[in-house]
Image 1 (cartoon, protein in one colour):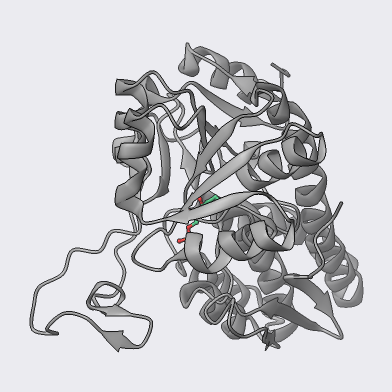
Image 2 (image 1 turned 30 degrees about the horizontal axis):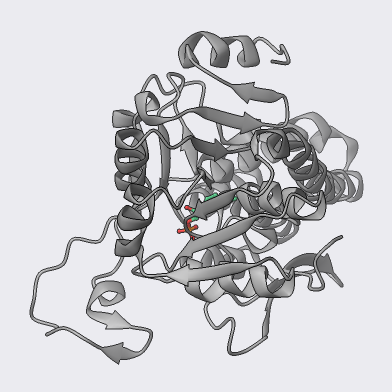
Length: 345
Ligand code: MRU
């Protein structure tokens, strides 16, 4: 059963995005008419989540080609778009794929080029939905009947072009009749769990509870969690996973208490060129995300703030990485190399 809302669609020459800054109290759409609007939407997190950022950027590339007939200005626009957020590799991946189409089709004339770019962006969007469905089918196998699952951040239809990655697996298990129960971390500081995942869980009618991030350790220690399933923003060639801040500490606790820990990512989230997680750029965001909750100030603004948006979970803490081409188990380096060579696991 697909979701009842559309979070990302290109129509009438605009990228229309459900504004994730104001959910769940307001349902508002932002209309991106230019690639600068798309860059802002990614940077300001109107749209967020690695695959959704990638799909949005693809439309941004199309809008950049529409705006700039000359190649140097077009390339500068791609650099501008690519710098919107540094951690999720899907942004660079989508821009590179669109640039490949540009290089191949630019000799065919402007109308042909723009048609080819728009059709590739549509393809990236629809492929992502198919990929998510396939990952969910594969991932549902690791979810035992009656499982209680802990998840972090938002990995659902809002974070992708549709359906979701980790939340896609959870929805699939639910629709397969597995009688699951979900604990969703609120995910400070931006509360993607509270504002977005809780909303998607309610929409999908999945039995669930929202918890403060710090409650997760107690639930795991007390044997109340059967498995942890979450997403990923960039996977290194050795299986280290960068994901929303708080993922690393969950992985340490899950490992200490023998709870299986899965990351769900499309192959486009694997950065084969990065050997290990220490090389993944980690975005640091504005201090106000920590000193304020929404628009309410909760700390003195004079205090210094450290606000990394992501952390890196070492592959040693991960049970498996679920992709559309199978589940990557240890030895991660070897199996990721098999994926790179085009094999299915
Ligand atoms: O800062 P965000 O909200 O873009 O971070 C999103 C996450 O960390 C998700 O877990 C990740 O992108 C996977 S989404 C399918």
